[in-house]
Each structure stands twice: as structure tokens, then as C-alpha cells.
Image (cartoon, rainbow, N blue to C red):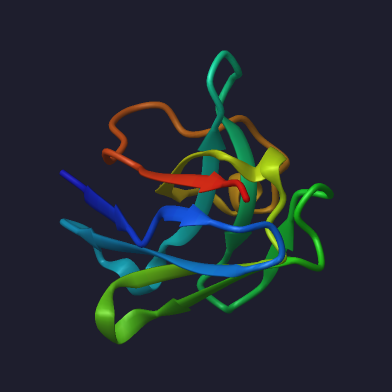
Length: 124
């Protein structure tokens, strides 16, 4: 069973920066696409960014140009670099193993288990 551990969240000021990490185990990380999602209070979980095994990336329009997803297969880790965050980016952020279509934001989030997520709060 895949286990996902997200970290790196915290309080950040608007215009600052933050890097989230997600370590995956129980799967052959290098052959899986990965995605970042977020869920704000009272809202559904939404796709933020995805990356395929070949490094193809895509982003939600709300974060395009500000967030960068990357991966380190040697460390079984996917990252989300958040630059110039806004208060509306406040949410719990999750990662997961996804299909290519999910990584590109073309399908609903995966069902099944998720990690505990990491809280990001953007506030001055």
C-alpha cells in the first residue's frame, strides 16, 4: 500500500515563498505520475499541479506562474515550490500517486487513501 507523507507547510506572508515536500513509499515512485491537491475549509479538494514520469507538468490556472512542481526519483519525493502565495492559497495540501490524466488535471482526484496533508496558511 502506498504511503504518503507531506511536510513543509506553515505560516507564510503574501509574496513570500514556501516549499512543500511529499515522500512516497510502497510504490515504484519513478514510474508513477504525481499530483498535488489542496482543500480549503468548506470546499472540495482541488487539483493544484501534476508531474508525469517524464517531467511533463501542468498547473491549475489559479497557481500557474507562481507554483512549481518537481520530483526527485532518487528520494521518492515530489515538491511544490510556492512563490508569491496569496491568502486564497490557504489550505491543507496533499500529494498522491495519480494517472497521467489526473496529473494533467483532466480527471477527478484519485480515490483511496491520502496522507495527512500539510497546512499552509498565507497571512500577513
